[in-house]
Length: 114
Image (cartoon, rainbow, N blue to C red):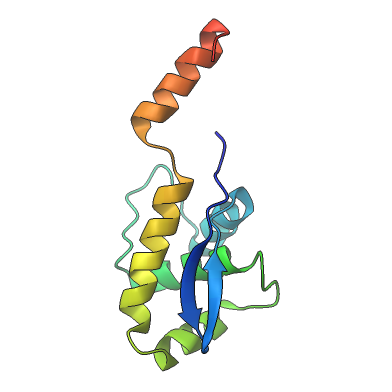
């Protein structure tokens, strides 16, 4: 699976930052949540899930950010949680291929064609 490097903007702490749900970000989120985000139903309406996914998606540009820092910024940003839900959902959508695309890619690789 190839994870696209889409950059989804979000304003936090009065600054525009960019969420990137890279392979490392997805792995960091899984470790922090203690759940397999590909094989379990993951709700992007849970505050703890949003906070962890946002943290993981911001680490590429801000390595020292903590989960708690992300939560504090969401508290202090007008519309923080709602905006974070939308941005995280968009970042996940960009990073995770549709089932049809994944199946087509696997079939093409199995036959040697692309």
